Length: 224
Image (cartoon, rainbow, N blue to C red; front, side, top):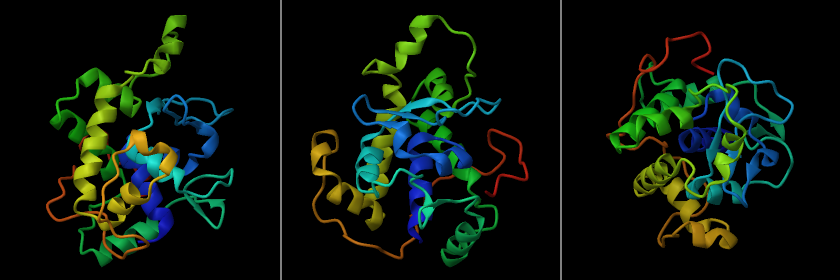
């Protein structure tokens, strides 16, 4: 699996973001101090597909800490933002023997389903996925994201999920083993992972996913 596709998948699984938001994500949007990820870049106007501010999971903190320090997007090809991942995705999907319906949109649907399966309350799942639009909330709500417990349910559930996946996917285990030492207190590193690149699929056997029509209607952009 190419590096940019792995980064794209990790970001989407850890944020619940849509594909374009994952491809846009750059260091300027990540607040490592407060543990927040603003999925909407500065200067971009919000649309009906609201991009939320979500908690920075421990796994994503370790992963992004290992990425290049360039100012461009984390998902890139030689420093340039990608318009889509369809070609790389389909190549990886075929190599893994996965069906045609296994498209990128499944990642977002699966995050939502996994959070509910882990008993995260519906309001928090909605906030994590950006279903709550940016209405005129009271001023105090603008500071809610700085609460240490902001969306703690989704954050902790995703991290527990990443730990389970890492036990089956060597490349994810390597993130835990080789994560930024300065963030060690935020991520319990484990010994015995496989360092370096691997050719395994990110989808272990019996990985439960939700099809492309689980939460939103199928659209022409679902394969991006």
